[in-house]
Length: 101
Image (cartoon, rainbow, N blue to C red; front, side, top):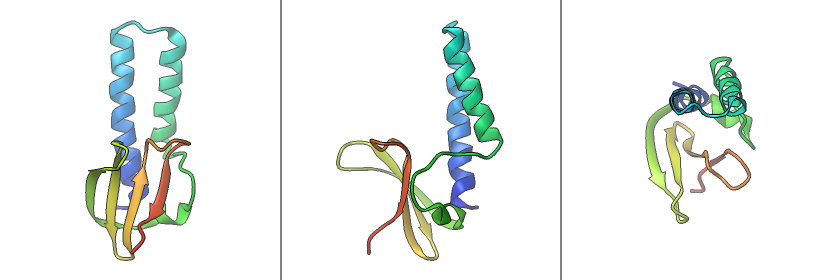
């Protein structure tokens, strides 16, 4: 499986759960509409990640969820080219980078 496919699948599950939650609590329509747009974006296979698009196409053999020094979770993928880290909650948006050896 490629890194991009895994990120999209994970984000899609989260978006579906959030949409279901917003509908169940009768949230404002603008919030529900925005979440639907976001879910449709994931269903089309689109994601917004800063930096190094070529890393998204790499196949991975192992996936680990880790916690950084600031307490935020990130995902570490083991690929044939080394370790690639994906930071979904980075300060200025989702970010992917190759780990330093």
